[in-house]
Structure formats: C-alpha cells, structure tokens
Amino acid sequence: MGVGILVEDLNAWYGTTHTLQDINLHIPANHATALIGPSGCGKSTFVRCLNRMHETNPIARATGVVKMGEIDIYNDASPVEIRRRVGMVFQRPNPFPTMSIYDNVVSGLKLNGFRNRRILDETVERSLKQAALWEEVKDDLKKKSGASLSGGQQQRMCIARALAVDPEVLLMDEPASALDPVSTSKIEDLIFQLKSQYTIVIVTHNMQQAARVAENTGFFLNGKMVEFDSTHKIFTNPRDKRTEDYITGRFG
Amino acid sequence: MRVKFHQSLDELKEKLLVMAGMAEQAIQRSIEAYRTRDLSICELVFRAEPSINRLEREIDQMALDLLAMEQPMAIDLRFILSVIRINADLERVGDQAVNIAVRVREMGAFANIDLPVDIPKLASLSSAMVRKSLQAFIEGDAELAESVLRLDDEVDEMNDSAFYALSTLIKEKPELTPQSLNALIIARNLERVGDHATNIAEDVIFWVRGADVRHSNNAL
Image 1: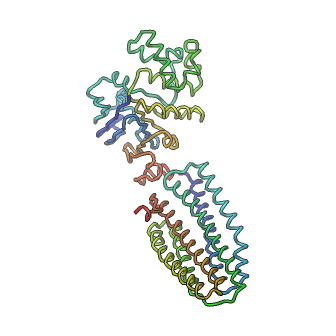
Image 2: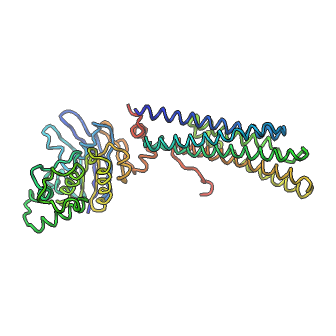
Image 3: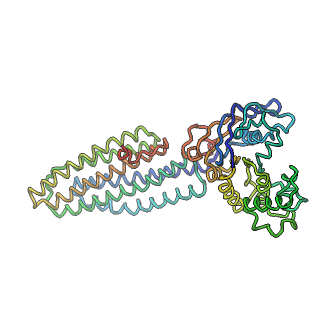
C-alpha cells in the first residue's frame, strides 16, 4: 500500500543556486498528485528530493524534512533503502538494452540479492500485469531484449521494473511526454489503476494530463510552490493569479 | 503567451455582443410595436429572428471549436461556458420578442383600449435588466451583475400585479378577454426576458468569480 508524504521546509541547492525554497506540503497516500510549472521551476528537483536522487549530484544539497509514512527519509534510512521504497519512472524509457524483458523487470530485485527463480517468475508476471504489458510480451520474456519493444511498451516495462521491488511511492517525471497519444492514454489508465496500491507523484507539462489523472495538483514557480489544491480547484478556479496566468497561457 | 487563443476569445466576445445587440433591438421593437400598434414594426421583429438564430449557431460552433482545439482552463474555461449559456439566453430573448410581436398582431384585430397594466414600464425594467447584465459582461463586473439579480423581484411583482388586474378585468368585462389575454401573455413574455437577464448576470458572476450562484435562493 502507498504511504503519505509529508514535506516540511524543504530547500535545495545546485551549487549556489537555490532551486527549491521552503516547500511545505502533504501528499496523501494512494492518490495521484501532479506537479506542474514552467521549465526550471523546481518540480523535477522536488521529486528527486523525494527519493534522495538529488544528492547524487556532488554540487547539490537539500535541507528540511521529508517523511514517507513514519520514516524520515534523510535521517532514518539509507538512500538505497529509500529507492527501494520509492520507484521512479523517467521522461524517456531507459531499458537496459542488452537485457531481456524478463531481466529488465527483475534487475532491481537481483541487485537486492533475490535469486529464487519462482519468486522472480511471479514478480515478473505480477509487475507486467500491473503495468498492462503482460499480454503483449508474455511469450517473448526471455527471447526479446527490452530495447526491442516500442516506446510505449518500453515505458510500461520501466513502470513494471519500478513496481517489481514493491515500492510504496511511484515518482513519474513526465512519463508520457515522449509517447504517442495511444501509449499516453495507456500510461494514464495505468496511473488511475495503480494509485489504489501506490502513492503516485507525477511531474507533467501536459496540464490536461494532470487534470485527467491527479486528485491534487501543485504549481511550482521559480523554486517555490505557489499553490497546492485539488486538481478540480486548480484548473477551474485557482486562488493565485500566477497559477491562473500559467494554466491559461498568459505567462511571459 | 497563447496570443492566437486569446484573440479568438476576444472575437467570441465581440460576436456575442453583436448577438446581444440584435436581441435587445428585437425586444425594443416589439414594445414599440405594442405602444404604437404598428404592425410593420412586428414584421421587422419577425424578419430579424433567422439572423439571431444563425448567429446563435455560429457562436456555439466557435465556442465548441475553442473547447476542442484549445482545451481552455480556469477563467478562460469559465468564460467560454458562460458565453455558451448567455448565447442561449439571448436567443430566447429574441424568441420572447417574436412572441410579443405575435400578440401585438393579434391585438390589431380588436379595439385599442386602455388596459390596467403598464406594459411599457414592465418592458423598460426588463430591458434595463438585459442592458445591465450585458454591461456587466462587457466589463467583467460581478457587482453590477449582482445588482441585476435584485431587479428580478421587481419585474416578478409587476407581472403578478398585471395578472391580478387583467384576470379581474376578464371577470368584470368578459368582452375584453382577447385584449386582456394578449396583454397577460406579453407581461409574461417580459417577465421571462427578466429571467434571461438574471441568467446572464449569474453567468457573468460565474465567469468572473468562479462562483455558481444559480438557484441560490432555493438553497436557503
């Protein structure tokens, strides 16, 4: 099951650039939460702070509190442990090109030392079914490489790979921006189904997509979170003029 | 900046204002026809109706295209939704003008008598409501729109008084029934014009504030 995420006074820097400033919000469990905002506003940095990927850059640092359920991710757990609890899907599908579909899906588990064939088989089937890819690839699991799939299939395979380690939170950074409309709608359907089991945070430039998949939406601008509210409120009657100017295209 | 989209919204607003001008003119002409019993003015009202109907379809199509092609959000979405609703109300105002003109033509077959109802005054009040609601739309002024809602009670009261006075007249002087019934229907048409102005004012408030105030009295 998913867990709620509580963020308190989160600040982040790249070198001397203060990329996130005093972010406070509560992301409810088992909901999809969308983050929108112009390029460079800090939304991707924000999600990278939620799985401690931000600190992998030597010039980056972050302060503040991020709690996933009861766990303070910066004090109570290692980055490896956190990344097992928090799956991530990126803008462009990133299969391991020399691995089969099967090995792609279980790569995280194998990295964590799982070798039991039966458990691996079950995990592959469960994850690919959750990612709505099982029927399309079940006969080629070990015959085809992950890179031989179409872009939309690759992205669903990457979602299956993220789900294979049984995370509580799924972060998606523009997961459909490189996909055609049919593949995009499959990913959106997937988000809708997965949120009953996981807490989903999705960064998107596509506001219609945010409106379709997320219960809550946060608007970021210049490293600050300007507004966080129900998606319905944000897209029909936002409180802040800057939010309205952005979503109605009156920006800049 | 979505320049083309916002230009299209301006064009939609201008088109709706043309529609508003035609609907207002139709009501004014129908009342002028009532006042003067000039059937040639009724003809002007009848002839204008197809243009109002055509414009209604054009505005709906334009709004539909913008919804489909531009996927508007927030205030822009509320604006387009309001335009669609106001468009329908203006078309109905045009229909009320036609209904009044039909009644005036009917009344032409009977003697022109003094009736215990001040139709021009009722017309002036309901027309003022339409004008004010459209002014609120032009200026995006929710407070002005609220003032229109308050006028509706006055129009309703005048219509109720007309009903009482004319039904009494019918009882007392049955020979005046045709003229009285026609006047009664005209009063009812004007009361409906006031209702459409109320709807327009509510749509302006929805557009500007994002607040749905329709039927708010019923909710109390």
